[in-house]
Amino acid sequence: MSDDRPSEDNPLSTDSDSYSAESQERRDANSAGAPSVAHEPVSGPPRRLRTVLLIAAVLLGLDLLTKTIAVAQLTPGDPVYLIGDWARFSLVRNPGAAFSMATGMTWLLTLVAAGVVIGVIRIGRTLRSLWWAIGLGMVLGGALGNLIDRLFRAPGPLQGHVVDFVAIGWWPVFNVADSAIVCGAILLVALTVFGFEPDGTRHGQNDNAKAEEQAA
Image 1 (cartoon, rainbow, N blue to C red):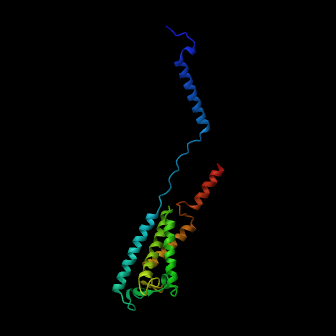
Image 2: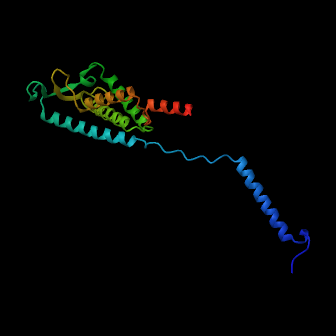
Image 3: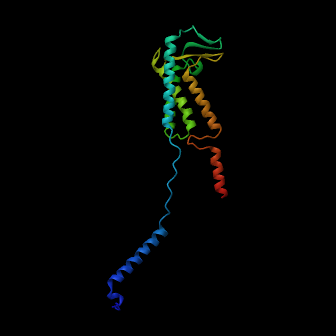
């Protein structure tokens, strides 16, 4: 038998219709007023501090090992010739900077080396470019190698003389740390000149992307 009573006599129907209407109004309000869900940003290249520290540790270990062998096996003033007079091992105690420069400023060079180490580590915390990590790792490893000499070798702290032992042609005598610093610095300069940024992007590519977005 059909129910011909008015709607007010059927509370179930009234409540259901009211609930459906309220739900629809809420959905409409949410869709109109709520901001669109933003996509999660795409993660960039990984940070490279571990790479910097790993490269620095390898170069530091190699520098300390070769210096230890040089001090134990070589005699100052008595070079060991490898390729005629052009390439040789010659033990030298260097109070100056890389390649025997600034020999009268040992204490200042020690402070500069300490500053370089701190600066490289701070930059490395936000670094994302692999090539920048390699360059900074080389600079850090070389700076640490020579800094250890200046702190712990004779004649005393901040005045220690760096052990150099590789002589090539007319070039001043140097060591592994010197080579790492110079090669790392050259790499960093090249990266800067060609527009490679420490965050893993390239300067020219960013400009092209912005120009395309503006044109679109």
